[in-house]
Image (cartoon, rainbow, N blue to C red; front, side, top):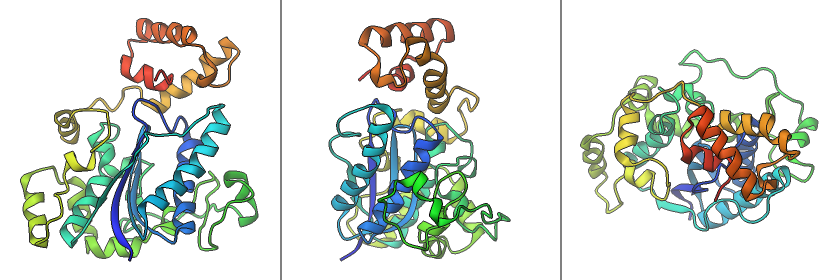
Length: 305
């Protein structure tokens, strides 16, 4: 029997998505895994080191195994890496009840706020916030689509997907063609209510509402949504949610791009996974001393594990 699950896969102190192509392939891998496991995607958010997914499936284990296999094969081939990508176990939480589902959707779509990388959900491109109530929010559907015969360039020739999936010229499936957006919109009811939940701050009111579901399901909050993600503390996530973040600071994708494009060629390397420990230390010291970049960010972007 298909149930609804919040799934979270974290890579710990390693960046899973180093550039835009990685983010696109991450979502495409998610879309293919939905199709291959006969699952339904509701909402998602991909961060540099982890992802949050709300999925309806018969087997969350099989779904995540399928996703990890597809994306890991791509990532390892591209970067000359070996081994499983991500921590050994992924986090799974069954979501039961209308108010629990509403809270899970809202927290996932607002994940970029919690990590201080965007001031509003709509400003973050790697989640499905902009695919919900598109017409009512004055957003036009993507018109520059690739012909299906060209999809393989962004998926591989053996990828399986339904004809209903549409891909833009950036090589990523359109979220509105992959996710069950009508079901999501039915849960939020109206665009005004959707906007309300996208800007609503964390408080005990969320848990009070979830108690109306009258079940024994664990409460959906920042602690439960971020369970297993080893990044900022809950206190810092709440500060970011309140807008106390430096949105102009160097992001992981910016630092990874600088390393991959500008620094690696000086070492005659094409991937951080080809660097020796000594080379990584030398680069880390240079970035810290000359750019004053946070050492934790340097370590994860250099894959110093």
